[in-house]
Image (cartoon, rainbow, N blue to C red; front, side, top):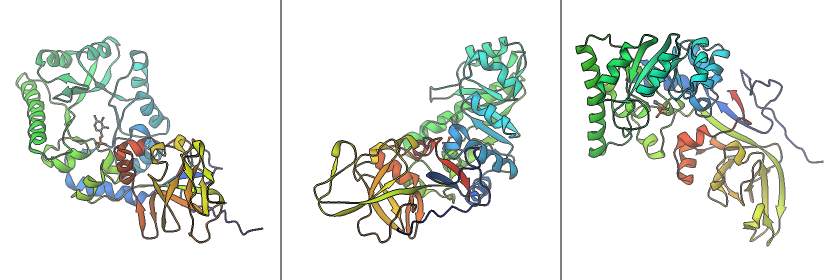
Length: 393
Ligand SMILES: *Cc1c(COP(=O)(O)O)cnc(C)c1O
């Protein structure tokens, strides 16, 4: 019998999808706590004293694991978070996350009781929605979204009468007001002009409210690119998402970023099986790959259901094995992926392959995968599946 290695992965704190008896058997995410803390201090150093980081931990903290990340952030003094959905806020509270939790997106009126029960802050997505929140009858904490040009959520900045009315609503506790910059990721003259207009229009609203004698709530405009490209717009909070996780949306932006960041997440997987394939034989569904010579292939225990984009099939994507960069061959399956390990010494079942992260001198980042699949790192990370185990290293 061959000497098969099933080395376990060592970790200080080991919590995996709340099933502690599972231990990096198949495919998993390793979270680098030192990198997370490094990014927090890098980003905090960019902001004035009075501006607090409000990490976006929506979508399982961009795939990293919302509870794991938020607990760590709580421990290092982060006191404010934003999520997209009320259920995400409830999940955090059930796991004892402290501080302000702002729901950035829509909450159905039937779920308003959850906002009160779990002390969540709701975004006022527009004037009619403010009326619904007010009609609920119990006090709800809110931040008012102001639409300054993205045309997604927020009351349009021109509608001062509606905005005054929102400030008069007796059941809303207005703790914040914010806008979202929709073209802050490029410094093209047109985008700068547009972004500066967004900033200007937001302050028009702030100024008019002050003129009318309304108390000014906490303000925020910046997401990650806002911190990088518009440092002067820092107010009470910065809603940092992707940068906190150590990358920007594209490889180019990440390389050019003047704020030093380190990727927090690595994605690793076990080799399930290694086999030889003869010239002329096919690999995978649809026989999309035909060997042109004797080959050695390895099957990895990860597939598109885990968030590995199927468009990486047929040589588009690569993985790292023992410090070598090797191609994905054939079609990525729901739960398995085949790679070409011809000529790589001693590859065997139980070995670890790296999908995102480093191996020897080589590195593959979420941005590389995004580039290969025509998207942004945010999407690659946030789609990493719930079947993956998540651990701190
Ligand atoms: C997701 C989101 C953020 C965080 O964005 P990043 O670009 O990832 O930093 C901030 N604000 C709003 C309104 C969001 O929806």
